[in-house]
Image 1 (cartoon, helix red, strand yellow):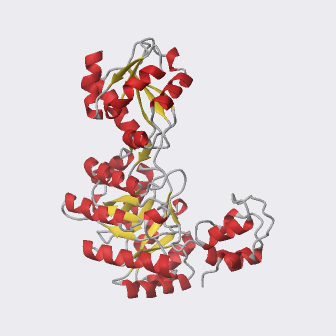
Image 2 (tube, helix red, strand yellow; image 1 turned 120 degrees about the vertical axis):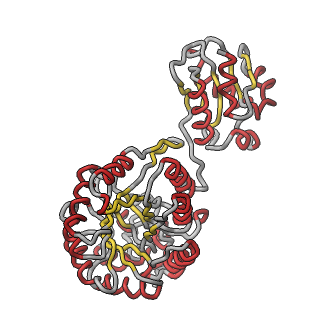
Length: 446
């Protein structure tokens, strides 16, 4: 049974040392009770406290790490059902399947696609997170050879070993045991052998069953064998079943603290049609899948899925922001145009992208408006003539430009007159309303 904050407080040191990052031990206890902190943050917790509070303070969905090093991914460790309640913490991992039958050139092409999959979107680096080696040939030696090809060809990329044959898993894990792979999958028939491998190699283990009742029983069975790092596959493959079963699992873990289902979910979105596969994967991103395995990773598909994932796992209460500064685009000189926008990441990167497309070297003044878009910041009184003038004056941008012309977004053209009064000697030019009109606008001024 979950403990209240007051009950947890009784086991803490009560020194209010702030080492945990909270002002008092009681505040920390309340965070533990709400599943918003880990007991590991308290360096002075006694052994008895750790024993009693360990499970009570653990997140309702266990965190699992796949891989090692800089490219390792953590999934699970979630505490809420809806992102607006707090936020979702660990983005779902997107993996591509490489079949044993694709050994050689076909596998090499997919490995190269993974290595070149990284995109930069609003300042974040997004990429395919893992490779799932699938035993479709029933040949343990062939499976192991593809595992070796993946490990050698994509160093550091987390690996999922997909076979229900313990012998194939044994052969494959010999090439990546030190890289913390995920083993898929233990079933009612092979659970003992798979659990033995996972325990010996200290690997995470996915369990697969047809339906939630069977999955619950298998979870209890495998945990009793000493494997704690589990990933769940309830067998859902149709979109309707995915939404239904993944939601039930999440609700059971979050709302009922039901331990047998308190683990990340793996979803196989592979379809014969690439668009259908992207749709199934998108459902997984939005509805609680922690690991999504795809058959192909075309650029268009990954751009859509990575962008969707980025939005779902962004804190809805804290807009994405860039640092307030004067940014140089291209080989900007003293005569280059100077534009201003807010520090909302999406606004900045869209504007920057269009300026780069124009090939006109420019300066972009990014003003801190707490991450609000131009119109929102203006409506909130955070993007006013007075504040813009103060920012421009204090930024020292006059050292960079000789034209003393400031281009403001077209949506706030109403500010132009007031700005000319607040910035004596400056020319205020109203720019386009839409960022995609910037290339034409800038070329016209060049």
